[in-house]
Image 1 (tube, rainbow, N blue to C red):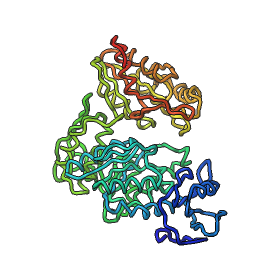
Image 2: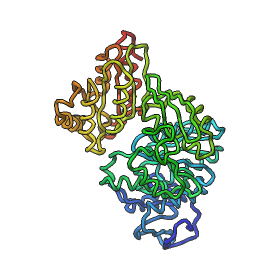
Image 3: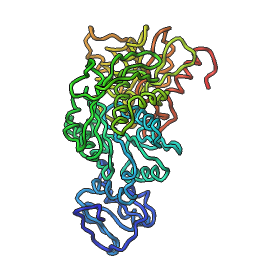
Image 4: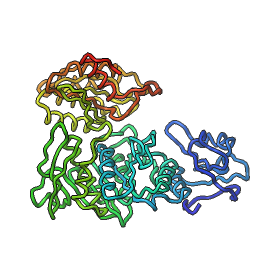
Length: 496
């Protein structure tokens, strides 16, 4: 209980805790149950069920009815307390690891993969934790959140520690920061990629969203480092909040002396269908970098990884060589090739900024038309929908509007909100022909059938996901598999 300053205990105190659970259905005999107040349910109402399942203690923020011998630990905020408690229960695993937290609206996943490559190239046993699950030397573990709830996070970190992992590159979502999931985790490096409007349905305001991201930099070890993208206006907010020294990287601007105050920047950036090349440059010198994943935005992600490596003692040249070994990142500007004479790219772009970056890159690397298939997720920030519609018709030549993960919403209602942004786009800015096909499989087939030699088809929104969520049910669906199916059907071969 030393991990919980300001707590009080009612009832007995002589209990051995066998585990920590925040969901009553996960409670096993001897577990501590943390009663969390959520958006839809109050965990305090599930205390009786937790006791029936064998809970030996409860963590609460208001008194509840329990047998007199059951300890109830009263705290001001169970969410805030749970992070520290879970870390203590698992032996503070982050203290035995070098944990690199990566936050930002876009680019977190690719940046963690790049950091992992840089660290492995330097001989470390590293792992990745984020939207695509946990990637460790022992294998891949699927997770249902970018950043797991505190007990799950600490359990995973402890497992990685016990496997002999030395470094973990972890995506840190704004929800996780706002909800204290990473409290109790020691971050040796905090990395900021960029910030554009997202998740405002959860945070409410831009200021709250920015504040959640900024919080990571208040958690970084003072003996560690913060790494920030100097191209982003929010970078200095992160730098001012940092408890550690700050390194800055930049994609834009420069010259041989570099942008003012920037430690690492890119020069001679060249994009093509195979990826991109650039020179990673510091005041002391530069070296060439070849990425097998396209987009100027991924050059920025590579710079973040190189700057992180340098902060941890990895020479720039060694980091650059390691990045060339990354043959791709699942669902991130991932090409689908079946011998066709046009490009097909699957990308996770599901925000206005992400979609804009992908479409601008597509325009740069193709001599033909840009075709985009996209939708917007249900039960998520509705303000993004018209914005993404506007960007699609401004930057593509053919926009096929479809479903993403509609979740509990009606797909056609989501599509109509996307179309509102399209209808509001003035004629001189409206470039694309627009077609609507709510069935995502049919939409992908249609876009690929419509492609001509030299075109590029962007399938945006779901990236690595292998399901489509409709009315609370996850149905098997993978944009990459469907794209291959469509390409083979177009070529007259039998789809798998």
